[in-house]
Amino acid sequence: MRTFIVGALTVCAAVLLASAVSASTPGVDVKLTHDASDPGYVSSYTLATGTAYTDATLAECSRSRGRQNEPAIAVDPRNTNVILGSSNDYCGVYNANDANGNPIPVGPIWLGYYRSENAGSSFVSSLVPGYPDDVSPFGVIAKQQVRTASSGDPVIAWDAQGRAFFGSESSDDPAGTPKTFGDVWVATYDNPGGPTSNQQNDGKRYRQTVVVARGSSAPNLLGKFNDKTTIEADHNSDGRCDNNVYFAWSQFHGNAGSVGIHLSRSTDHGVTFSHPKKVSQTISDVQFPDIAITGNDNVYVVFRSFNSGRGPEGTSFYYVKSTDCGATFTRPRVLQDFIPNDAQDVAAPEAAPPQSAPDDAFGEEENEVAGNARDCGDFDAHCESGYTFFRRDTQPRATADQFDTANPDRFYVVYDATKPGTVTSTGTTYGTIDSGTAGQAAIFFLRVNGANGSKVGPSLIDSETTGHQIFPDISADNPSAATRGTIHTIWWDSRNDGCYSVARPIGNCANRTTVPSLDAFAARSTNFGTSWTTSRVSNVTSNPNFEQFSDRTVPFAGDYLYVSSVNDFSFGTWTDWRNTVQGTDPREDPEDEDGATADVHQCRTQDASGTFSGDLCPRDGGLDQNIYGDYTP
Image (tube, rainbow, N blue to C red; front, side, top):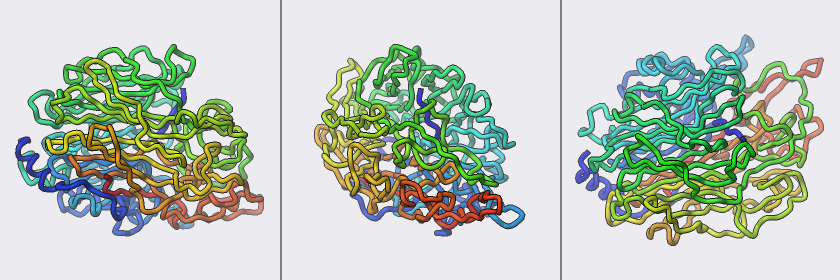
């Protein structure tokens, strides 16, 4: 959530061929987060056992019209009817009222568990067990390990025996202190009937949560803090490394400023994980790891370095390789240099009117480098340019076809970097390369031979002259030889931004107002990435710049989108604002640069001293940020 600068194979194949005869195509967008009594949230315990259970958090989640972002999605490799999703889910934040009956932000931000058993036509919404007031039998199991009041950065992987693994970073102290614990953990779901039973029940029963690495519980993100997670499992059932789970993350050291990529593996179906090892070695400022497992079961971790001045590395992507099922890794090797596309501005804080109570219990924003801002909004989040925008950074996403034995060490990478020839002066302090300098963000593709380090690319997947392309993801599992070479990608695209300019943030007009500007787009290749067919996936263009976070002062879109596929069946998810209710912020007098176009519906009172209350109507739609999904080409 926080980002810092610094099986029997024969049987499985038959099922897959029956359920994914032809390529999936975008249709009606499907909502994964039913937080508006449509129909609401169900306990994970109830989903698995049929036994009724509820609590204050589930009740709030069923009515909240709350915020969700950073979605994850994973199609069951044994049965494409079963799809599991997740997100940073804020639905339970207002799960209590004050003495006057007004909602107060004391509930958790937690990991969602969204389940479809009809190939993504609909989803049931739930939460991963272990949130603070979860006293279900599953919650009791989870709390033997989980010690935090919040969790986020969800990632999901399936093995070949119907188990699903949910990785998370988790923070905030249940006692309400400023401590940010910085733990990472993995929760395991299985098929209650066992690996050979009805595959419609794959990933349905919660089994356990294991803390893989603990932070140092220091205040305000200082000390050791684990974040930016990724997970993958070996599910090709070829007899080598079968069902191993690999979990990686960025480890930050707030006082020292350095960041490293760490990895742990499980060889017993998520029951235990190995002692974490630092795979980035001496590179000092790295983030955004992603894992790919190739057709010969080798494990690759791809990550980004930042040119921070603390080490010799520049702005590049690196990778490391394991040929022994994740026991050891090679030294990092440079994969690709690139021109970043990282939204940034110069902070210009403005005084905020006094407020008697906060709108949010937990801060979603990290401490910025002095004078630098990676997202901009109102009051203390105001920036010199006057624009309103969400944070985003260039990052790599990697995958491989675990069933491709003809190309046993091949993996694929996508990333969102600046398109050459588009760099321009912005005329303001806003930029994507440096303050005052920006370029068009585009999605690049690499095909890599890990055996010798050779590569094809980078090439543009969809070379558009209008709009930015950001937050890509990629998937390429093909158990059927008939679909070998099929790759699926997804990204956010602003080609439908009516105010698009390379010199301005996404969705920002020249007069500093904001407009609907983002869609989910996707592309499919059937020839190992040599050519692509692109489609718009989302049915509605929405506005990502609504100020829904940090006491309604700043937008937050999360840090990624997600796509998952098996053969020609592919499903993608994204954060969406189509249900957000726009409004005015009464604290802005006079109205600021965005002309209320980025403000959300909120209710406040003001006393004789001029002090405002917190938002008294957080359930009325101003926070209605959701996760939607659809089939992708």
